[in-house]
Length: 193
Image (cartoon, rainbow, N blue to C red; front, side):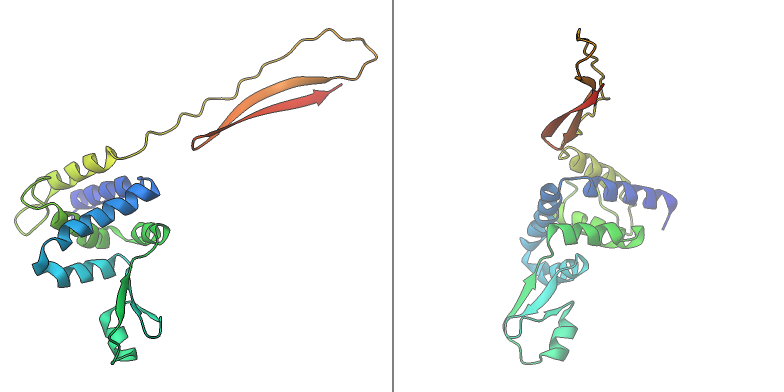
């Protein structure tokens, strides 16, 4: 794999994995849905799904298998078979573990099959490196990202009160705010004299 191809592939991978879990999952399944609309590629679609971590499940024994060969070997007479999608977390972990070469040949290929007729530029093939396609794909993925929340530095708010010398008191010595997703938590550190 050429260095430039690896860099473009890693950029697509980073953009895809930086989506929220729901956007990430929906994006992959949107691509699969677009491919499934082309009936002549049903066998290809199964191979792509296996590369994404889908498993076959026997309706008779409820056993899971990674491919058709395993299923046929274990249950040659099984007629009730389901193709089960991985959970969003499992799918994310599966794609995160993929090396650049596998990601390029599976995920970039999946996106290329989903966007036909040069919608996003010409995808990688024997005649084209597909860099424009991958750049447009990254731009498309990044427009779906949620904006990053800004974490502000903690602020200290000293409070001065006039007190009697023999009284115990609490003084606010530090105030700060924590951001976690859409939840804001305020903290106050109290010290006593």
